Each structure stands twice: as structure tokens, then as C-alpha cells.
Image (cartoon, rainbow, N blue to C red; front, side, top):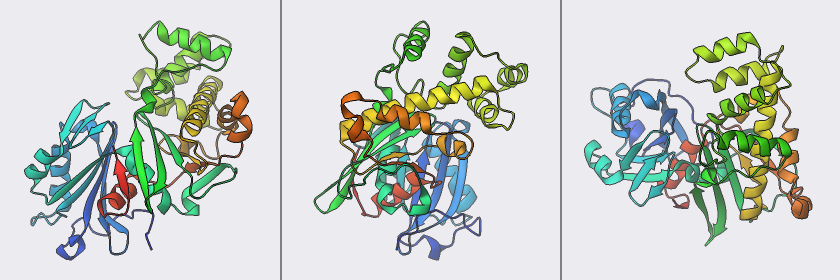
Length: 354
């Protein structure tokens, strides 16, 4: 049985026995990079590590750091690598959108002396993990009626807005990550029409990723502040002025017991926009197998703020409202689905594209 959650190793160093037939799995995102060694024999993980992506100049530099810290003097690490990256993958090449890095898999394989290197989009990896998630890895936001053999869709707000799907065919699962987060934002309310005008004064084009991902939260905050009606708290303003990453400041203030009304309004608008795009995605993929929400932002909101605005926006498609009410919505709270999916792909468990 596949164990679905990577567990930190009990030792910083990995032994030769631990890496035989194992796979080094990497989730390389715009903000952070997570790595662990996957053991196909029992589905377990060891040697978990996390790094800030922008502290490094390249994927190779990140991997060499991990090798130095976890491989010991013997560089005892797996000779197979599964690398999931936040950006489009074209064959053996990938461009990491929010880092400006290019990864060439064959050059990287040779530089690190690896036997094999699988390069995939990070949402392809997340989609590949879906069949291996247990009940404890999911929170149901809408029950719906899950069709076991139907397509499943994933929407993942983090540093960017990832989108992808998983469908069945030829007796196996096919995972596909895409770049739908960069599609044009379509407002669904009068308030969102004004938001689009606000954004258009600053940007030539406006995508969903610019509003429904981590960096977009500050855009929503500034819009809500400037549109009036809710006063900005001086303490929040001071924290924002000092913060390099402003999104955590807004989220923390929105979720506090004495929450900031402006920050809470910002997150509500964020959920409405995300829910509308989730509905778009579910319709495009006819995702009767469920719409899965992943990424690092949403799990932080559980127990602190209602997801009702997201679900309402998801269903708000006049001619398709009844259909959308039957599609289950799940929040993925597994901590490392991209690592799990990349490991399964590299071990031959699934087929993938992109």
C-alpha cells in the first residue's frame, strides 16, 4: 500500500541501503523548493528538506546543496530524480515562470551524474497524486456525486495559480498540468468589473493568477482599500510597509480573533474569484470526478473563514448551476502532493503529459 504522506527522516544522512532503487523527488516552486527521497518498495519518504528558491541561482545549485547536506561525505543519494517545476515543460526543457530559470533536463542529469531525470510540470505531479490521497488528506467543501471513472480537475493557488486535470484511459491515469492560471480574468459582479478597471490602470492585461494567487492578494487589498467603505488599520499598514512578502500579513490579519475587516474583505473577494475560476475549470474538463483545491494558501484558512463564497461562486453559472452542484469540491490538505505525484510518475505508476 502506498503511504500518502512524506515523513521527515530520522537522520540527516541517508545510507546506501536507504537509496537503493529510490528516487529523489523535488517540488520546485516560485517561493520554495521541497525535496525528499521516495522509496518505491513501501511508498515511504525520507530526507525531507525545504529551501527558499530565490536563495539560489539555479535548480542545479539547489540540488547540490541538498546533496551536500543530506548525502554525507559519500554523496549517498539516489541516481534517479523526479523534478516537478512551476512552469511550462516542453519535452526536456522547462521555464520557471516566477523565477526566470530555465531547466534543461539532460544537461542537469549529466551535471549531477544521474541515471535518469523525469521533468514534469508541478500541476502534472499534483494531479498524479490524486488517486493516492486518503480520506484524511481531503476536506470536503461540497459533497456532490463523485463519478469514479470521470475526469478530475485541480486548481492550486500558491505563488502562481496552477491548473490541471487527471483522466482515465488505457487502464491507467493520465495527469496533465496546464497554464490556465494565465488566462484572462473575467469579472462576474459589478465589484469585480471595477476591480478589472483598477487592474487595467496598472497592467496591460489581467490574468486570474494576478488576482487568485499569493501575490494577487495585495492587489485585492489595495483595490478594497481604494474603493472605500472599510478603513485601513494603521498597524496592518505598518506591517505591510515593512514586509517583503505582504500576503502573509494580510492573511494573518484576516484570520486573527480581532480580525481586520479590510483584510477579511480581501480574502472573501479572493475566494469568490477563485471559486468562479474553479467552476470554469470544472466545466471545461467536465470534472465529474471532482474539483480539487491544492496549493499552500487555502489550508491556512480552514477553521478560520467560511468557504461559502467560493462554493457559491463555483455554482454561479446560470445554465450549468444544477450540474455544478453535483460536482464534489475537495480541499487537499496533504502537505506535499507534488512530491507524492512526481514520485509515482517516476516509479512508473502513472502516465503523464506536460
